[in-house]
Image (cartoon, rainbow, N blue to C red; front, side):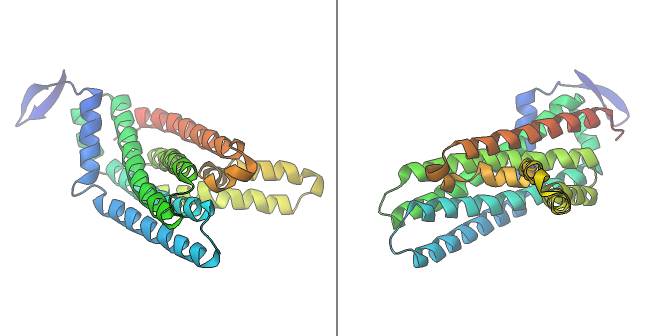
Length: 269
């Protein structure tokens, strides 16, 4: 039980269970004041980009191939994850300057609220990505006459997991900063500027160290994400490349999530 102040009277509010808090947070994301418009934009842009990729590759190929399906799925997932990541940093940053205080009055256990919000973003991302990629994979299978079902299913599974990890990285970065604008800058820094900076440093050091620089670039979030959703390369390179991307991106999400939870526990709101 927790105390709450209502009309100058102290009352005992019922303790919020994790499941109830998670459902409430998920509903809040989809209501007015949440992120319904960014979700619609993410799905629409992802479908449009995936279908466009499919049509372009279909026009270039003499006959349907698995690459038409997997590349379209990967393109749609990438666009969806990009839009949802930006939406997440803005939404989380906005909450830190307003709504979060009210949420903590209802759910004073900060760990519970943090985990519920992270899980609601994970569920939203997984469902959105699954919808987009299933539609794209279905269209690809229609174009190929029902061939390459396995490649399509692998593409759907890989992109759902990879996109969820990528958006959770964005959510964690936003909690670390606590401001929308600063969160966007940090998101750009980690996902774009960090690999570019490492690559630039690599251009200025001896060729003998190029392998180490390449390795550093490849363990930043964006290259890991591209590996994590790369179902197209599985037939030629095996599952190892994809699984390394999934694992590396999950590590980023867990480490940044742990740091964000530590900051969230101690931040004055």
